[in-house]
Amino acid sequence: MASDPLRNLDLNLLLSLDALLEERNVTRAAERLGLSQPAVSAALRRLRRHFADELLVRTGNRYDLTPLATQLRGTTTTALSGVRRVFEAEPSFDPATSSREFTVVASDYSTTVLGDHLATELAREAPGVRLRFQLQTHGDVDQAPESLRHVDGMVLPHGFLQDLPAVELHTDSWVLVVATDNEAVGDAITMEQLAEMPWVVTHHAPTAFTPAVRQLSMIGVEPDVHVVTETFLPVPFLVAGTPRIALLQRQLAARLAGAAGVRILDCPWDVVPLKEAFWWHPAHRADPAHGWLRRMMARAAARLDEPS
Figure 1 (cartoon, rainbow, N blue to C red):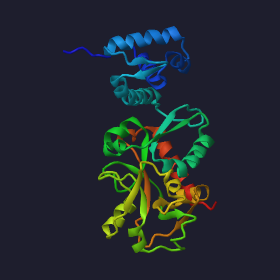
Figure 2 (figure 1 turned 120 degrees about the vertical axis):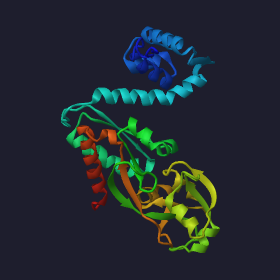
Figure 3 (figure 1 turned 135 degrees about the horizontal axis):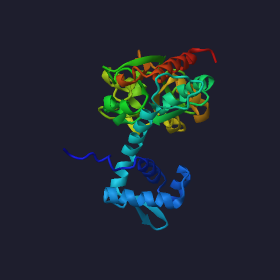
Figure 4 (figure 1 turned 60 degrees about the horizontal axis):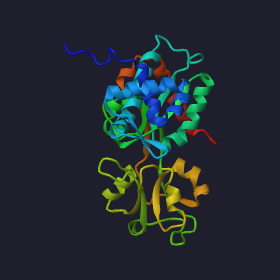
């Protein structure tokens, strides 16, 4: 029988590895861990022997990650999150006394419109609980059954995932944004103008797309894409002061329009609404803390419909 590689490995090294890869500096890693510099230096030597790799290499006045260390950075964070989840498991859950950390994968849009309400709900019932938002990537969505094992859940619209449990959150609509000083566009816009104008779009790839842009293509208007961004917050700022146009969620557009210098227009077609949900792995079903989090997610989403 093959020996277990963990049998002779101190799992505290995982904490040291995570800090070293994040800080790229022994002194700062030691401060982060609350350990002495010699202790972290000794941990780095053990890690180098284990991986047969330098992990950190000096370049001038700084340290850079080796190719292996770069590869390990993401998997180390995921592994550490999994270890924490194992030791945070409780037969019952008392939010008033818990110090658990919950990790929610979300786009910058979801974090912006929902995050403050969720943080408020958690702080009211569980002052010791910590909330971590992890920026959503294409890989998180494409490999959702696996990626959801290592976090508490993912905020994502319907249409991307199936065969996974979800809590319904809220519905938003899509609007168009143009520069405040764009005199070529009045209070309304035509389909013909949409076909002629330069566009800013998000997630422009075969498996990563904005549903409303995909719908626009399906009804015969192929956007003339000039700028692509992987996140939503920059969109109005990439439109401001230009002849460009973009689609944005109404709740996010309303928050950013004044600061960015853009106007909000209704879409001239029957645009598909955005129905957000909190997706989670079935392995969390029996976890009382996770059940509480799901209730808090739904409560936070309900606050989006309250008059401001």
